[in-house]
Amino acid sequence: MKKMILHYLCEGYENIAFTNKYIYGFYYKDCIVMVYSNEIIAALDKAPKNYGYAIRFKPNNKIKKDLMENGFVVLCSRKYFDKICKMSKYNKGEIFEKLVFEYFGLKWTKDNIPFYVNSDIFANENHYQIKFEKATFTNETTLKNAITRKIARS
Image (cartoon, rainbow, N blue to C red; front, side, top):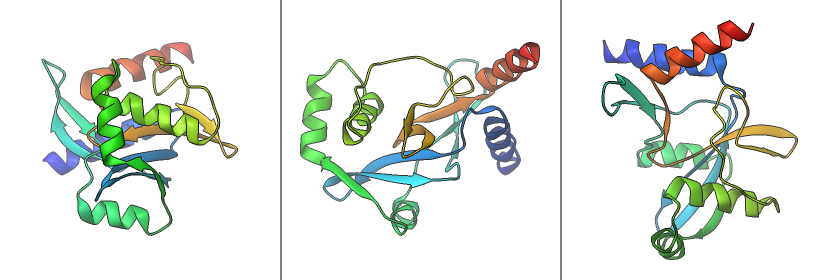
């Protein structure tokens, strides 16, 4: 049953997302690693409150190694990352996103643009969603509302 829910949420997300290209980030040994992917890497989790299930980027070590097989970039040390996260008002996902922007020589500003309206970054001639370890792609309620809004705009 949970595999079906995961499939439904991932398919729904990919059908309405602005882009299906991803920049993923995660801890690997003592580093913060950035990888590119053309597929959603998601695990099913419980969403907060009454939002049903959520899909999150929660890679285990095997998934991390598989993602790194096609190349990876070390953005910084884990120690440095944890230090700037601790000193910042932003969360780890936002700090990772900022580091990705800086890697591409772009200025980062925090935004709350929905995944179905625009990507997080345009770089290398592509639009990407940026997700750091444990990030939420969406949940059932948000996905349902996004699909309703997208249909209403059509």
